[in-house]
Structures are given as structure tokens and as C-alpha cells.
Image (cartoon, rainbow, N blue to C red; front, top):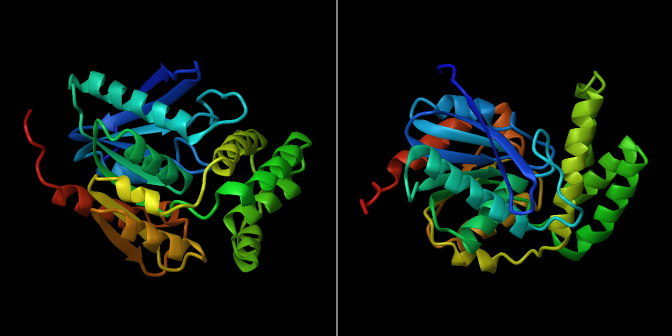
Length: 285
């Protein structure tokens, strides 16, 4: 693995929110979208592993520093527009009218990627998603979003984390294991950055729904990735998503959890490389 020479970029979203990111490497462009509580660091180990073959793009989604804060009430449509502004930026950087971007997302970022591929697939060549929390949406999330916002605003970290566990349905034993492994106190600046992003993501999840059939409208070649040991109902919804997508390959990694992008970057990078390499060549236009 070689060290990537990164170049910084920023652009303004439709509502003026500043989007900040970086890109590096060479080859066909791959745009990575991070999950809730993540940021520019989330996909970096995997992007580094692919930058010798692809031009890799990382962005801090709206609400996550160093990108700007949107107004309350974020919706997935806002981030779909953000993604397409990024796709146009990638095209302009490469001097291409149709850049054919490979879109990759993890967790909530995978949810954004799905919405983008369904609503506005123009400019995209393929889709790869890792465990989008398709069960964590709709009316069940609405009161949780309110409780989270109230806890976050009064600085109650324990209450905020408890709400997030209700959203994600993480088993108590996994929560306890992570608590035991985290001896150091989290950096307060980083914790607030992640908390602000979560607040906006919950707004979007509460306004969405859990319908899996809608994803059958995505025509892009797709890769669905999953950890073999991730807790329910993630496995059921991930399999349901793969079945709904018309042109999808499902890859399940034995022994991995929802944190595989952090704990097994070689495995994730190798899976993405295999998928991207197997795609048919782009047709010249």
C-alpha cells in the first residue's frame, strides 16, 4: 500500500452548506460516503488501499465537520443533491462530461447512496453499499430523534448514547464490550462533531420509511456487503435489499460485524476491487 497524495476541495451545496473533502490516486473515480458518527477518516484506510488503481474521493457529509451545519430538518433529498454536486465536481476535475463515478457507502452513507442511485443515477456507474440501516427509519425513529436532540442539547452524553443504541438495536453485550474496551474519555471536540451529525441524520431517518421494494428501481450494477456476525435485524434487511436490487451481488464476510470497514480494511478493499474490476468496460460516447 502506497501513501496517497491528497488534494483538498470544497464546494457549496444548494442551500449554501459548505462541503469539504479530499481526493487522490488515479484511475476511475470512486466516491465514498461515511456513516453516522463518521467523517473524512471513516473510509481513509480503504481509500488508501485502492488509490493505486482508482481516483478516490472522500467527503465530510453535511453536518459533519469540517463541512458545514445545515438547518434542522435534513432530508435524504438534501444529501442526494450534495452527492450530485460532488459528481459534477469530480467530472469537472477530470475534464469529463460523464465521469461514471463508482458510489460507495457504509451504514447511513449506504442509505444516502441508495437514495441517490434511485432518484438520480445520472453520472453514476456502479453502487456498492455496506449494511445500510434500512430498519432504522420512519415513525419508530421520530420520538427517538426528539429525545436525542434534547439529550444532546443539554450535554447528557449517557442519554444520547442510550438513544442511539435504541435506534441501531445494538445488543447490550456489544455495547458493554465496547464500553469496557474504551478506557480513555472521547475527545470532546470530536464527540460534539459526531453528535451534531447524528442529530441531522436522525431527522432524515425519521422522515423516511422501511420499504425495501422501492430499491427495485435501481438499475446500476450493485454490490451489497455484510458482516456475518452483525446483529438482527441487519442481516434480514441486507438480504432483502440484495433480493430487491435487479443487478446485485451479495457478499457476506464470516466473523465480521457492522464495524468491518474499520476492523478489516484489507477485506473490504479487496471485495470492492474485485467488484469494480469485474464491471464491463465503459462504453465510449
